[in-house]
Image: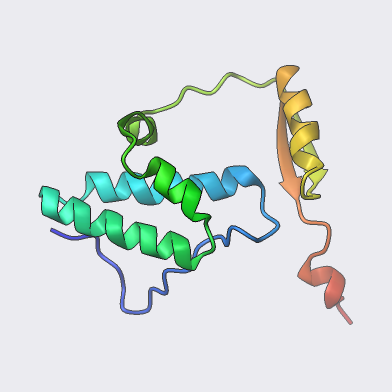
Length: 131
């Protein structure tokens, strides 16, 4: 059994150089590795899928040092597969996303049990207003 991909699949994910929050980029990384370890039943299939994942991550500009450092780390692979229990949040704040700044603000707010969401500053509606 292999990981199924439609014929139209392009292997394009959140580019590492994009202005998305780092947690989204980590999520892409963790999800692809977890899928590579869960779906193929044989060790050869898992190796083949991991190799594919590392190539795709490189194509999406993920740093080689990040990919290599996580490649054979069993603790990291187990953390990808384990379910994380999130603390309960009482409040929610939605911030405009500004690379480097929003993450720092979110870190401070999370210490105070405030859940943080992000919204883009510019959207297509800003660029193409309704007539």
